[in-house]
Image (cartoon, rainbow, N blue to C red; front, top):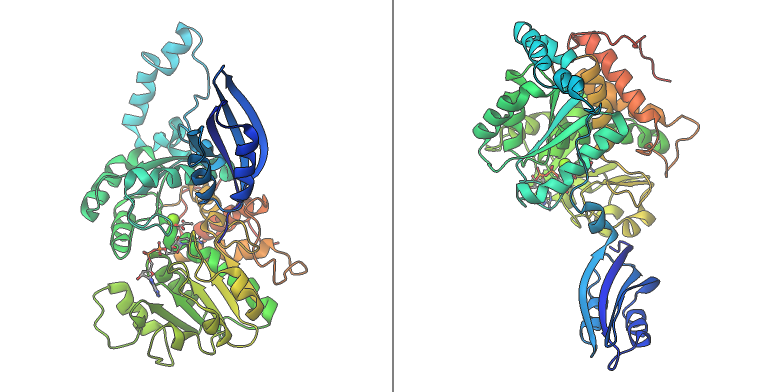
Length: 473
Ligand SMILES: NC(=O)C1=CN([C@@H]2O[C@H](COP(=O)(O)OP(=O)(O)OC[C@H]3O[C@@H](n4cnc5c(N)ncnc54)[C@H](O)[C@@H]3O)[C@@H](O)[C@H]2O)C=CC1
Ligand SMILES: CC(=O)C(=O)O
Ligand SMILES: [Mg+2]
């Protein structure tokens, strides 16, 4: 799969040996397109230039190899726009007011702050009004299941968590802090999250591998009185359900009767199966590496044991190939390339394929497209992006604003229906089953639906002053 990008290559060119013409033809031969040239230093013997080159494939090493092999050329540095966007990290803390004089200082810091702290000490709930707690979420990971990259560790997880924090802020105005923990021990993760929780209005667990993630989330949700939400489980499930509701409308099928295969029964897959069942799906078939989950198999994974009873009503046995035969829907949250063209061809007429693995989908969209009616991926470079970013900003906005104690099933179902309803009935078509993350209505819809469900189910501790009720439009 190719990802077009722009590289900036800094070169020392030894004038007596090589010319810029040599460089330009080398880059062209290796598949690059020069879009800008900057002279950084013009010495008598050596000139240093930054060459900006468009390349089709982000992983393209050919250009660098060609240039490195050229006599008189030294490649000093290579960066691309993506790396440049990460220099020094992507987020920062900005004070809400400047400290210009001693009076300001004594208000925001000592001695003035002491009175505020004492007010909170007398009544802890004042932390919601007198600190950043009410607008602040911790994005917590142990780096064990980062995107589809696996267990890459807490440092390598940081860019993804910073990205989530940016999305929280830009889309929903929420201040989110990445907390990348250097431990994989579930009990220690629970202890650390509980210990830091006083400063946060909510906890977004991210990219924690399964099955550890289930217990970690359950125990934290039981023990904390703020919403704890494992995004890869429930954010993904909410958005998958939203997309599926509209995709089924496009093909004229129903959730109750459609045969739905979910592949990859990890964090995302378990929650997708559970949410689909809760929404009324009648034929869910859960498939992991060892095959279709079946009743009576003594799985060590407790979630699998439960799913084996609630899914696969036909008792189908076998691997993915058996599961997808005649299926109306395939939802992949397993990993890149596990679905092939024969699999897709064996599905029912007007099939729906959500290949949601990141960064490489279960099947390349170009391969699947000719054989399916509705296709979606988790990526931003194809139509129908089914990504949990459509859920978590609005869901936390709603949960924070009504000071929800928890995120319950009704809130998740409400969020899914709200996302689906952003696409108006006269707009829905094969290439538009899910709104864009830049559609401003998404956060507004999800917030409203989540607040309404939280109030209805007793999870809300307050009714936001601006909340006058919510109805799908
Ligand atoms: N589009 C979106 O919004 C989201 C996409 N994802 C993507 O979904 C994938 C899974 O994420 P998580 O659930 O967090 O990971 P996970 O590690 O908890 O689960 C992955 C599951 O897939 C299974 N699996 C691997 N190869 C398989 C195969 N050939 N056939 C069937 N099952 C197979 C694994 O055994 C595991 O149970 C990743 O690629 C991730 O990037 C995850 C969350 C959100
Ligand atoms: C989108 C996301 O959260 C993931 O792929 O892990
Ligand atoms: Mg994730």
